[in-house]
View 1 (cartoon, rainbow, N blue to C red):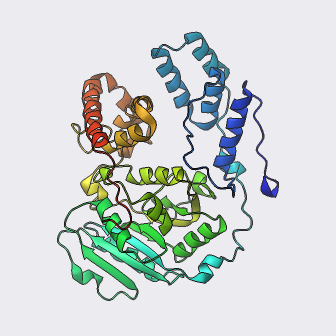
View 2: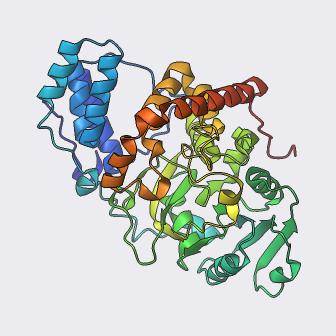
View 3: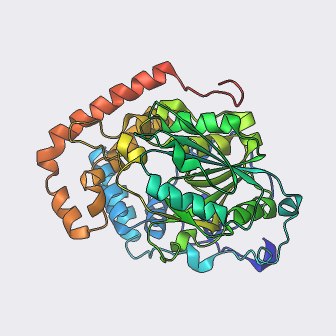
Length: 417
């Protein structure tokens, strides 16, 4: 590897292939970024049979101890060998969780890198859907007006009631806007991308704040890493530190459409956002996976950060839920049907059932309490009482996702709307 960076092989694994997988995982999460092209259509989730002890060692190294115990319980009740499972669990009991951020790869050349791309001054199209957030949108546009990079246009697709056209008067940059009657996030983004003139599309939210070098840092990252997508970091508290695992460059494991710069050619090759996710969740995650499978490079960018205010009124939360596994009401499908549509479409039925088993029960803890261990434990004690309702919620979600799968993806080409 470059610049003297080395990832040690963990000899605690029994299987040689386990050691190599662990070594690659560590390099990935520590921020090593190869300049080789990604293989298109990589089937990274192809199952591989490894020693049980190695599996528990990997879980303990990379996740909380809770998940090791959760996996043990799950595998015991699904008729795996009790001796092998308990033995593997026990032998991994002293394995400590590692912090990849403490062994991060240093991209020393980035700070002094003078970007030819920035010097070429390409047009950047910033796209903002908005819904009933004029006071916050004013701060958004004010931040954009102070950017150090000046060659940009802004398109706002406004779905607010009442619509205030006068709000868009007097801004000192190229600002396009229109009213969209249907409250539809992905339709708004797709239609704005269609009208965009820039070679680079910068997707942004209407409840965020950024530094003056925000656009510049996105462009510089694309250029330095020869990447196609620059996924910025989101933090929810003014002045807060960027979370440790997002504080350095690495391959991005997400696509946040509230803060991402994408080359126009990505949309030209794989199409726009799938409208099966309208008013639901994981539309951005689906697009990120689709871009990855097409061979595009997505870099997690710690310098293109935003403050995400997460306003409780307006926006997607007015149309949908707080996250993919926590519906707005007790009688709504759990998870949100688009989540199962996503997993079933890309990973198949078996993996989707595993997602349900590992994610649905933890989701009964309310969103605002999910980091409170005491209240989470108390909530889990209610599982026997809530289980019949949860089963009904899951069945409703599965049925709704089946309709989506039968209908198929609703993905338009860039110039076909």
